[in-house]
Image (cartoon, rainbow, N blue to C red; front, side):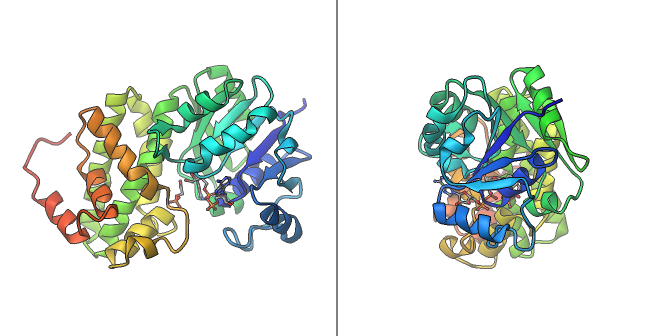
Length: 329
Ligand SMILES: NC(=O)C1=CN([C@@H]2O[C@H](COP(=O)(O)OP(=O)(O)OC[C@H]3O[C@@H](n4cnc5c(N)ncnc54)[C@H](O)[C@@H]3O)[C@@H](O)[C@H]2O)C=CC1
Ligand SMILES: O=C(CO)COP(=O)(O)O
């Protein structure tokens, strides 16, 4: 049986990890980098020295910088930063085959137009069949072949199943879902909550506070999910609770590490250390969406207020502690 052809857009840490997964059982997997120099360096070094040092590209992975290289791909994995998704989708439009699956692997919400990634893709790529891949998965773990499980959502269940089969390996397991919105919401929101968890760690608030933050973040996520029409099983699954626990509990997470640096007193400008911290772009739009839906998200609000310099970390912690006592839920 011939396997679906796969191309990957975005040659950062996650793009490389997913290209390596896709390379298993395939002869060639184009990996598109938007800068020709980056594609050339990947082809020369056979690794992404900046983001995944010491973790080689699989043999079948072919770094490219022209989008024509993805012509004819049956499955395209979109692994660029969320704020670049529209620009990339637009550029891909002439190259994407009718009916090709376009799998969103970025975790974020478009800041300027307040759109979920699936909405961006629906607007820019009418010929695509959109899907979302999200869940607890550090690129380095996946590259090392450590066991990982994520969710793959597509509105059309047979498509979701086909994508799970096309991408699963012995150590990378995919569970299917038809709740696209729920899956992308979990991935986007957990980055914001991970910043809060990192701040608590940076301020040395203790393990009890850390656990309370994760539980209350989950309450915010499920409230928003319910309000926007996501399924509760999705919130409790890999792309919701699973990714929240991973990202809020590990300094391996860039969002957590960013929050930790803020908690220790670094400025928002310096705290990321030049790394991609999707939560910093998503915090404000997430809060706007929640407000528009009449949903309270005090932890996300606090992160947004700190990032937009309306509150200090200490003032935000104080405000969270002083909230009126209420029923759990
Ligand atoms: N690193 C990880 O473990 C995971 C990352 N993700 C998500 O994957 C997405 C990408 O993250 P990473 O690969 O980790 O980031 P990264 O920082 O390692 O790489 C991002 C890549 O995007 C490229 N890029 C930047 N601006 C671009 C533009 N305008 N057009 C096209 N490409 C552009 C950069 O050159 C870089 O190669 C994010 O949304 C992230 O949340 C999801 C799961 C795991
Ligand atoms: O999405 C991730 C793990 O599931 C990666 O998290 P960070 O972007 O915070 O590193």
